[in-house]
Amino acid sequence: MKKLLVLLMSLTMILLGACSMQPPNWAKPAKKNNLKNIKIGLSVSTLNNPFFVSLKNGVVKEAKTKGIDVIVIDAQNDSAKQVNDVQDLLQKGVDALLINPTDSAAISTAVQSANDIGIPVITLDRSADKGKVESLVASDNVKGGQMAAEYIVDQLGKNANVVELEGVPGASATRERGKGFHNVADKQLKVVEKQSAHFDRTEGLNVMENIIQGNPDVQAVFAHNDEMALGALEAINSSGKDILVVGFDGNDDALKSIKDGKLNATVAQQPELIGKLAVNAAGDVLQGKKVEKNIPAPLKLVTKK
Image 1 (cartoon, rainbow, N blue to C red):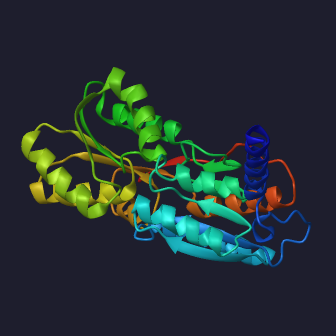
Image 2 (cartoon, helix red, strand yellow):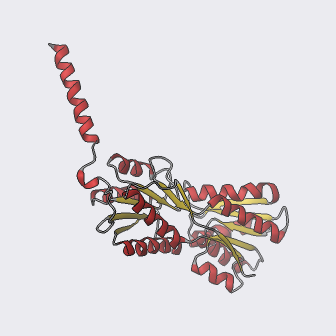
Image 3 (cartoon, helix red, strand yellow):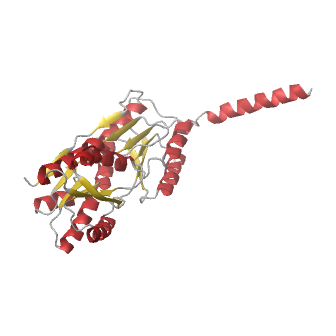
């Protein structure tokens, strides 16, 4: 009798588990030709950065042309907030998620939550370390880092003293841009200092001020984004030194600074295009079409000359 009771209880647990794994009706992706009335959730790492504002605008504009509704939430560079934001978007019944991760490792739990209820995930600019992502829409950050290092070598020659301002620790863009940069720099340049300034202009200024004091012979700076590059440029101008500065993104402030002869160069991305391509990828997934695991957006090095 006891064995029979245990067996019945086991079967009940299995059935309950199977039922709990089935996504609720509101969470099942809509596979249909007409994308109107589809709802997409967009979680952006921060809207306090022109690059991500442009990325968001690209998503919103493309969604509008397709009749897709978009709910946009700003994570404010807080990885814990972003995880909670994504959970909220899932509760609101979005058909697909577009995520620009603050931290590629931390966002993994939120991606897995979406996976559990059958909501497709597209990541923008940065990847997620775990969970199923239908596609990553991004520039080739490794190539971009290499382009920056090669430009410094071309301008200053080999063995120039270089500072690297890194982005948010844990973000895939930080890892990849750093990797590409060091592929060249470790052989042809001398990296005298590297510190994180969290992709932030004010931090870039403060970090660079401290670095200049400890490294008076710095000849160049590679910043993982334009905001840090512009902050570093302020610190350099205050010091009276002549230091070459290269950023990454191609935001409006950086392009104007290059035109004015201040910032030397930036590895320019196309954030609006990234947003547009992400919406198209989400639409394809919802219609049951196959999408590439990596969808690239072209890069170009912008200088005054």
